[in-house]
Amino acid sequence: MTACLDRWHEFLSDGADSPELLGEIIHPESVFLSPIVFTPQRGRDLVMGYLLAAGQTLAGTDEQPFRYVKEVVDSNQAVLEFETSIGGKYVNGVDIITCDVEGLITEFKVMVRPLQAVNLVHEQMMAMLAAMKPSS
Image (cartoon, rainbow, N blue to C red):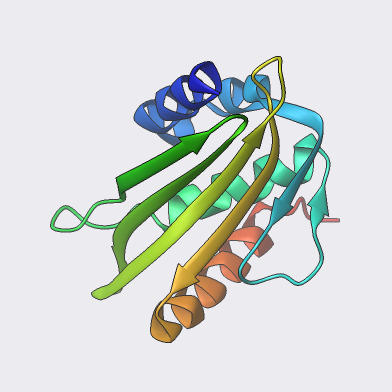
């Protein structure tokens, strides 16, 4: 689990400028569970799309950047509590990450609070995902 988390933190420190690094740590059959979308998102491409959009949405501000404030690690799972700010509103949440024996992320679940934050994340994530979709 440590190697998996180290690679996740490396991706975060490089920012959204390194989606190829994200692709290297996401299992091809991974699952993303969103606080916004009811249906689990399955497969590397969808998971990467959601994580990249979330990274831009939750980046925060200079005064309140995205940061992990607590990590609880056990076996192949980790719960990482984060804080950030969107539109001047405080956002608190957790990323629950499951990794396999090869150090690939197989499941990524995000939970967010308070309700104002959930509504803001929903609004901005939907706009970000719509902007990321290729036009037909």
